[in-house]
Every structure is written in structure tokens, then in C-alpha cells.
Length: 109
Image (cartoon, rainbow, N blue to C red; front, side, top):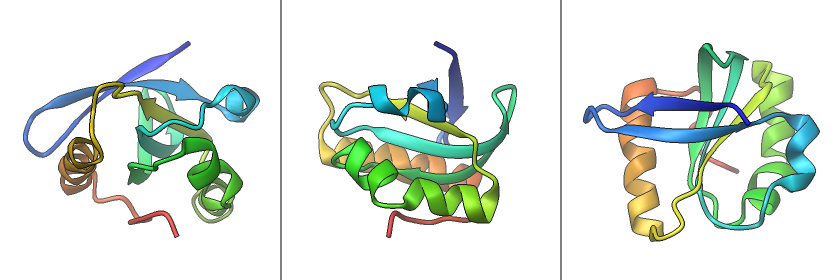
């Protein structure tokens, strides 16, 4: 599985695993930090950064992914599995990354 590192406004780096639509059936229902992007793994264009409580439900099944594909040509879903993290720590990661990348989609709706 491909990986990527993203840097927040604070300078902190975060490692993510890359998923494409082919692998969406293997995405868990756990909490994580996700980045939806377009482009290539070597030059991703960040579209959305979020901390869903249930990746599969809140990103894939809810239509957020479909909206990102339709409106922003999304083709990559990066997931940072923070197994011991809390909702608060995940949100801090989202805030740090969002300040740096300023993605066009601001939240999961």
C-alpha cells in the first residue's frame, strides 16, 4: 500500500496510507484523520481534511466522497489511523493540516 506524508502549519508531519476506490471495501468503520485529494500521490491536491467517527459511513456512504469526485476530481483517499488518539487529538491534526493546505471542501456535510 502506498503512503504519503503531509505537513501541517505547525511543521508537524503526519503519515497516511493511500486508498483508491478499488480498495474502499477494505476501509474500516473506525475513527481516523482523512484527506481527500486529486492529482497523483507524488503531487496531491488536497480537497478535504476531516476526522470522521466512522470512515466508511461518514466519508464513503454519506456521499462526501462522491461530492469530492464530482466537484473536485478526487481520486485518492488518505487515511491516518491514530489508534490511540482521541477525537480531540484527531481534530487538532485536522486543524493543523487545514491551516497549511486550506482545502476547498471545509467539512463533511
